[in-house]
Length: 242
Picture: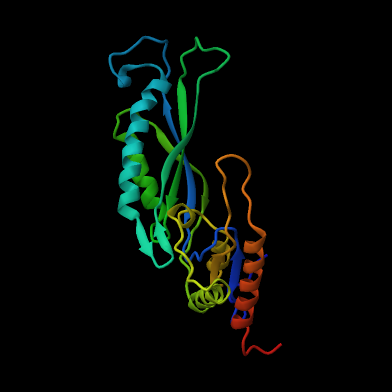
């Protein structure tokens, strides 16, 4: 448990994670429920807006969010030393109707949207953007936030990052490779430490993902990672009295 806003002198947090590189920034993970409401007996309309089915009325809303999401990702992408940060927008669930009574026209429809918000954006701004997109289709509806985790950009992490990179060169003889965008574009545990002022970075062994089967790591990678962690600890604690 972290409950002190003033961490001890020379405190750092190294988050061991099987990703294989330094991460100096993380995201706010948020999810919004977008609802469109309509109640009527089913009569096929000429347009989606005239259709009494809330499920079919949601189609143009989904298309509008998809278009906004592509623009959002391009507008807020940022490049850092550790990699490229691409805040993603994705619609991953929908709820409408009764599967056991498909003859009944659904009078409500909800979609569940995952929006990744970079630390430099206020969540209220993004929520307003999403609501404007929903209402722009003329179908009505509302946006409800039901889960959010604040993201932070790491501050004063340079000594820790330098120690990690030096340990990688000492053990592997090469510089740390850049992180792939999917890894730098998600909420990470280091946010918990950065929130309370403890400089934190993520670094770990390589995780291998086969086309089929379970993720795995090589024993040699585990051994090298352990050596790097030891070197980092020695460097960070150098000159600190026991």
